[in-house]
Structures are given as C-alpha cells and as structure tokens.
Length: 326
Image (cartoon, rainbow, N blue to C red):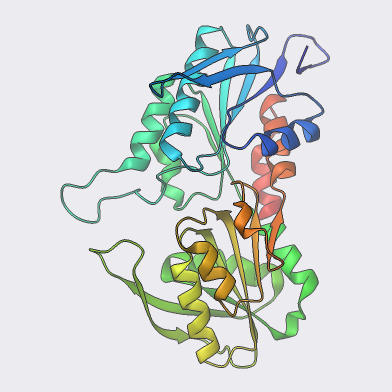
C-alpha cells in the first residue's frame, strides 16, 4: 500500500498526483518516504477527463499535487476532478499542493468589466472539496485571503538566494527588482545576502499583453554583478528588457532568478539571445526541452514542499518553516 501511518495508526498520509508535472510529485514522495498513489487518468475523445484511484483513500489525509502548467485550463480541471474523487472516496482531509497557482496575476480589477480570476480558482477548489492549499510564491500575498481555509504560502527565496550567494562575490553583488511590485521580495534578498538594492522602473501597455517599456534604473549598478529577482518568467519580456537596462547602466553581469519558469511563447529565443549569464529557476513547473541550456539552472523545490506537507500531516508548525525562510 502507498502512504504512511502515524505511530498511533489513526492517521494515514497519502500523496496523489495529476499528470501535469509527475516528476516533481515523485521527488516529493521520495522526500516523504512514501509512494505516489497509483491513479488511472485519461482523456475521452471529446476532451473530458477521467480519474480513478487504484487504492482506497477512506480516512486518509490526502495530499494532491498538481502544478498549473500549460495547458493550464486542462490541469486545473483535472485537479478539481481529482479533489471531487477524493471527497467521494471519503478522504479524511484534502490538502491541494499547487506549486504554481494558475491565474495568480488576475488578482484584482485593473479596469471595469474585468474578472478576478485568482479568486475564482480559489472558489472552485473549495467547492470541489479542498480543505487546505499549500502553494509556493504567490504572485501577490492577498491571494491567500481568497480561499476560506488554511493557506500555507511557501517561499523559494532561501533556495535561490543561497545558490547565488555561493557563486558570486557578495561584495560585488547588487539585488535588483524588475519592477516596483517586487521590491519587498528583493529587500528580503538584500537582507539574506547583505547586498544593496536597485530597482528597474517599467511601464506596461495596458492594452497590449506582455508589452513593457523600461524607463530607468534606480540605484548603483555600474561594475556590479546584478541579480534580477522575480516570482515568474513568462514570455521573458520584462526580464530581458530589465537586463538590457542594467547593462546600459554599466552592469558587469546579470543573473536572473525566478521561482516559476512559465517560459511561454518567445521566452526561449529571448533568453538564448540575451546577455544574461545565467537564469536560475525552481522546478515548480516543468522546463521545456528547448530551454535545457547551459545558462538555465533548475533547483529542486521538492524538499521544501515535502517538509511543509509533513508538518501539516503531523499537526506541526508550518509557520516555523516561514520563520526559517524569511
């Protein structure tokens, strides 16, 4: 049987995975010392998704991992179906692990007649039967309040910052926020690495998606090794434009870090042709084959997720992980 029980034999932890990113699920399972529960899942001819678990989940504390990668709508729907299956299989509790939370950028109304899709995703998860969400580096912190239940918000900063700090002379390092919205996160990097902060000021075209114009760099970057920190890289337009601005202001080198490598559309070509020396990501999302380059480094988020899941299962303190990662 997959899973593990507590010493009292009253609780049983079981890990389930959708088809979006099975490699991450297997790695999380290894860190937990269990196996992913065998699941039969396939698409009908008309695109409908079928799911059935091959083992009983009755009375189990179920942890269901699914990252919202492309095609994002399919994998969100599969996760909802899997939650419903667990609820109807009499699971004791259902914790959904979402390494990358889909629609997180649609967290508020910028203009009239727009949806708040991040809230809709939270409502769908709760309606399906999720009791708890465990996720990594939300685009904005307030998304935690969209779900009417516990949300464990984990951070990849320690993994990324420690990797960069071990490679670069910290006396020559400057942490750079690619926009005003990332300043708080960049400030945490500064505290961890003992480095100064710079900010790239940008302005988006509100009518054209993924169009960014960089205006100026605030802070001293001349002759410095600049580390651009962001939560995600989608088309790589923002990051590459920010890197160009840093080089134009005299930066000696630019390293890019992000938790989520969405890497859609022209991202591959932009990163290949950029002057950025290294792009450091975590594996919250699968990395496209065309981006398996020397300059792309992917670090594992599985140990962090596994530790948090273990704390939840054993009624421990997930907050203690936050304190360690701050």
